[in-house]
Image (tube, rainbow over all chains, first blue to last red; front, side):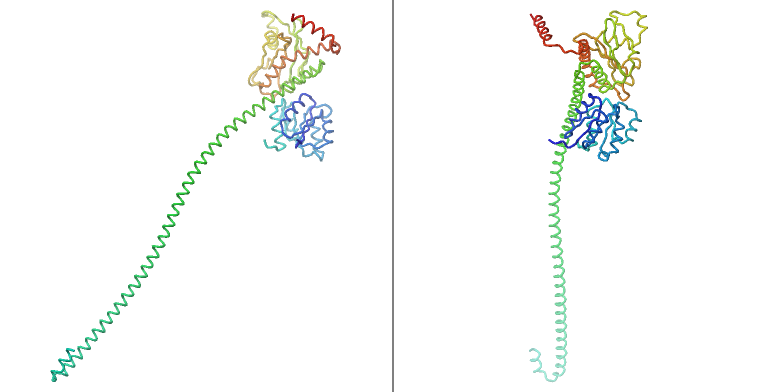
Length: 127
Length: 312
């Protein structure tokens, strides 16, 4: 079975990454690629095309907000939907992420159904 | 004829008689003409009347035929209406049956959707537990075990500040923390019996709670809205066990603002941590004490022999 959609998960915590991959495996025809941090994420983005990106904010080397900025200036991925995942629940952080070009914002602790629903919504996958 | 017989016998009055006859004839002719005229006139009138009557009857016949046709049409129309009404009644029944099927299907669908959501949530919870357990036991290095424990509480439970206490002699010692300085956390003396009032007064509610959880082995987890929970005591205290012995306590002081309350998955995670956190920590401590050397086969043989002796 060939994947219809591709997803990049950028998260420095192996635990969170594993959990996100588990959650995303529930979305049919979605192939997930993992990246350890923002720089690794950019490397993976340069190597291929992705339909959606999920990224943590707080990461070493390059944080999620910088990654979103870089993604939006990349002609290949400027329109790719981005979901920000963070521990911060404050409205200002949400506003800042959206202003930088993120499409959605999920706060930790994450719930798999919430992640699945958001990814399906942005990929326009009918439930 | 009678007039001619009479005329032959009476000569002198013949002129007068003839004149009278002429008059009579003329009168008779007139009468006859009048009669004929009247007769024909009447005949013509009668014929006209007949023709008119005929026309009237034709018209009436035409009207009747039209009326008949209209009645036939009406009758046919009535029949069609009756047929349509029968059809409507049938369709109404069918519609009612279909609606009943739809309602039944909706009930089933709703039930299945609820069940699907439950299964999805169960899967999600199991994934949380699997990931936590996998990460916790994926290393024997103490630093990594502690990092995974902290991450587990932050990322999966939503903890903002927490600490791990282990029993050391008659004290509970804080060995690691996150979101709160380790140096600020006191060692807690464990009192086997009832404590004196003056001792009780010198300790805060948090210390009492941690000690109680350690002594009883019963976890303290705030139920309901966390925003309305007491601020001067931890949101959760979970005893860490090895076999049946309580060897330490996990203390969660505060949670992320968006964490409104503990969920079923949190209770499952606490249960898992109670059973696995201490073994992971002890395993890492033993590994550190052995300078990172894995036991050889001789150790396994010795253990197997001892187990065999125990069974005799």
